Length: 193
Image (cartoon, rainbow, N blue to C red):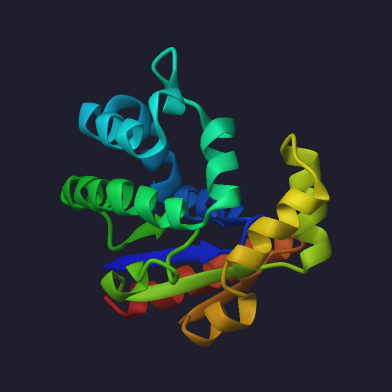
């Protein structure tokens, strides 16, 4: 059984994913795999260099600030980049899933609904948190600005849009409450197997 885990930036998807891992549930973090593939896959490197130009990579590593600047100024580049990377991540996930031995797996994807990945999931959990909490977390965690965070939030689906299509919603503000919600959902999912 595949359970999608999503939520807006700063909602706390990673925190929730770790709670499922503590329960023995394998978690696949699609963004981490995408980052790894963008640095390791010769095919992806070639295609991204063709898309963004010779400055797409510096010393063999993806030049994130350079690419982020291009995407920020022209959103069509994000769609083109996703068209290169997402199919490879999906292929990797399909190989990974067959190596797992658990009643279900969690597939954590930031833009699960935006890219239609929810259709490949049996159930979907959306993590939500108030916008002010999300911004505070991100300012603490990342080297960024409130303006950049708000631009990312604006480009993602709203919590309302996501929760309408979700089977479960975790309100992630206090860790103890989040842990209780994860445990409750875990028991509900085990009953569905």
